[in-house]
Image 1 (cartoon, rainbow, N blue to C red):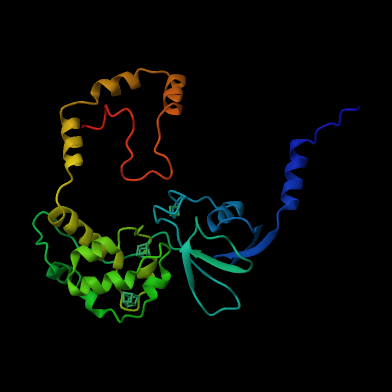
Image 2: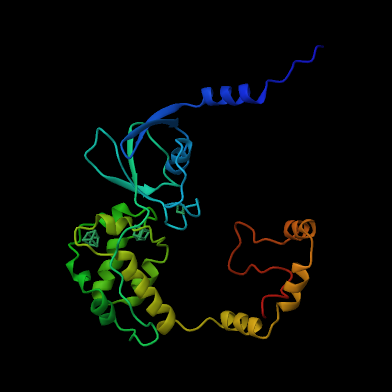
Length: 259
Ligand code: SF4
Ligand code: SF4
Ligand code: FES
């Protein structure tokens, strides 16, 4: 049997590109053709943009990649995270890497943990018209209107718990007709809640004390003295939490849990 020569790398890459289905998108008004399997973020890079702003974790967690887009056949403005939204043909795209939102300045230690504190620092919360645009805009499926309603009622705990998954993308604020900056209101509530309302976590106190007692210093010194290969071996051998672990899961080696 004769041996078939393998294709040169460049030709193989060309074939792969030909197999991809390209669709047109418009980035800030300029037309590009990009594979239809890409997220907006990857499509921007495919089109030649270098993302130095509006890009962080690439995994839907940091909220840096807020993006506004529109389809030609629709009057609607759509929003989403560029790292999570897959391109569609004829999408018009513009990024919102930063939204200039109102941000109160305060010292959390001296703020009273009462509902009136939210109203005092963000009086515009009462301007909410209950339209629900914020909830419809939220890529994290948070009931934003729900937590803003609780902020109006002064229910700090409900705002803190209801906004827990917020990634601070700013998309809710960018669309709010009442010019609320929902995520900063939520941050205030979570800070008040964590600092003054919920009891301090015992395990956190233990962990902080362990750091202060230099419990990790020897292990850190040993790690810093290891070679790259040794570090790789240790890393690969680490016991990791299973995907479906429940709250009772704990590693077998508890030496560094401060318990
Ligand atoms: S978008 Fe603004 S006005 Fe509308 S419900 Fe949300 S916070 Fe209220
Ligand atoms: S609440 Fe607002 S800032 Fe937070 S994730 Fe939702 S849209 Fe983004
Ligand atoms: S890059 Fe972090 S959420 Fe998209």
